[in-house]
Image (cartoon, rainbow, N blue to C red; front, side, top):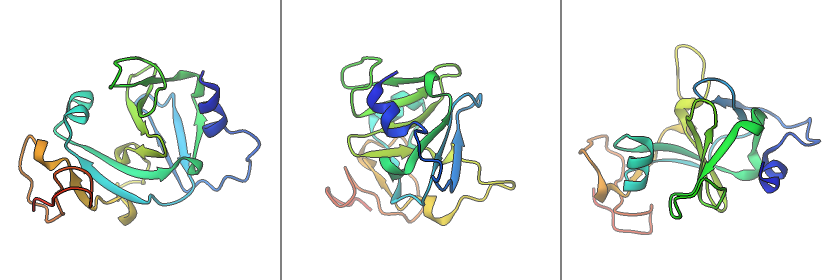
Length: 164
């Protein structure tokens, strides 16, 4: 296990961590919690997200790293850095469950990008407003057109040309 990762996300002595939402991988081996609403949520259409997720886009909610705690399965977490094609925690990287292989997050240099579909929002599943996407990024690489009235950026939000 990566010691820096353990120090950042492990339970440590923080018994007062106020769990607001919980997420888990497909098989339930890895579970993590967040203590606040996300800073933003976006839908990414970059080719790396498309290839790694086998989907036309990736929906992620963005949190500061200090707001994340791994509750279960810390030893079962795997990493993958797509830039170097190495199964190592070289940031930014994909974080996944070593048992079922489900991607549980993207760990960036400064942020944790969580996948809202992994959170338990109850039944019927009602996604909180804070997790709703505010825009599409890398929309120039899209596989299909979407007409959802969200702003669509060629690259990163507010750092590239807005397409629609």
